[in-house]
Length: 245
Image (cartoon, rainbow, N blue to C red; front, side):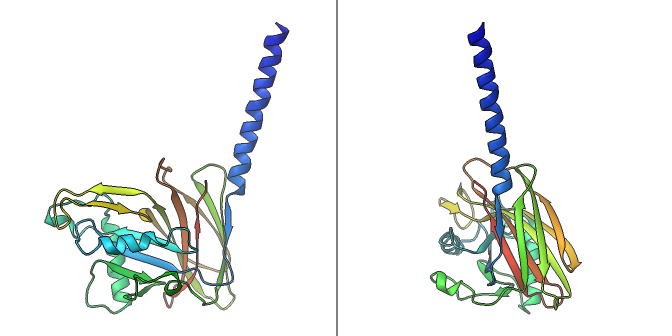
């Protein structure tokens, strides 16, 4: 009897330790922005576009770099016979807004956008992506009370008027065996795939933003991204990307 009681107490103690340890991990998952602007690289792509795979492959080379990389799969290629499983009409609308801001005559794939500006000088090493521009906003992003809850404190410089923000969840290690369209028969691999996109409006001064992400998928490491821009100019003020183990 004493043996069973002692075993029960030991098991309960171990369980309590595991629970406290898990809570400590949640609290510890945090990132703070630096003094330099973190580059934001957006790729507009589609599994139905034969010229897109090289751009997808190049984007994957940014894994592990201090960058916010986002692959927005657009839906307007779906009509030729292959429905991109990662496409969302909202991403097409976002690309149209980017084209308007850049005074482009239309939209195209693959399109790379760097810090809000159309960028055709991609395909190069990291040095071409990195930014030496100073940051105009400080961001502290952390995971809060549960695995899918996040909170960010955003502190813009006093000279910044109104600013806007959006969240994304991106995931690595996705793939598809394409059976129709321009890439029929190809096996495509994707990283930084945007799985959730949430614009959160305009603000002034220091603010605390909260975000609830879609559940994490096993075998698809995710990044929680927050991008802050100047409402008047569209200039990227700062961005962070958080990946919790």
